[in-house]
Image 1 (cartoon, rainbow, N blue to C red):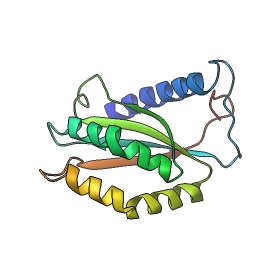
Image 2 (cartoon, rainbow, N blue to C red; image 1 turned 180 degrees about the vertical axis):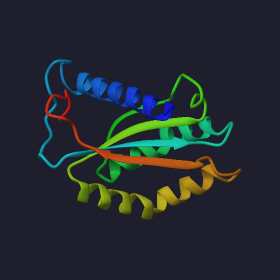
Image 3 (spheres, rainbow, N blue to C red; image 1 turned 90 degrees about the vertical axis):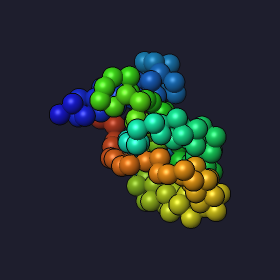
Image 4 (cartoon, helix red, strand yellow; image 1 turned 90 degrees about the horizontal axis):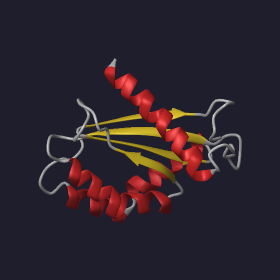
Amino acid sequence: MIFRLISSVLFTSAVFFAGYWFGSGNTPVHAQTSSRVFELRTYHTPEGKLDNLLARFRDHTVDLFKKHGMTNIGYWVPTDEPLKGKTLIYMLAYPSRDAAKASWAAFRSDPEWKRVSAASEANGKIVEKVDSVFIEPTDFSMIK
């Protein structure tokens, strides 16, 4: 229950900040096509591994996502327990669900990603679990 509440608050914040960032704060951000989709992802790390995961995203993953056609909307870390210090939440956007599938396939097979992933986990796994949900904005959202 608490995870749903935290996810809801984080999602609402993500949408607000994305709308503000990409628009004027009051102007809806429109997609190139009506099939645009968003993906909200939550990574749960083993104790003490969040900094390793953040470094991998900061130094490599964000750019690799761009390379493979994913739009980075935002990245957040919870400030309250029980997720504080061991969770990364982020949002990506894609032109369509098919584009998302193709982007992830290309990303996962990218030799640079394979190298970065292996190097970042040389001292053990840095991700225990990944939650992913595809979402679309409502007609009253500030981001479209």
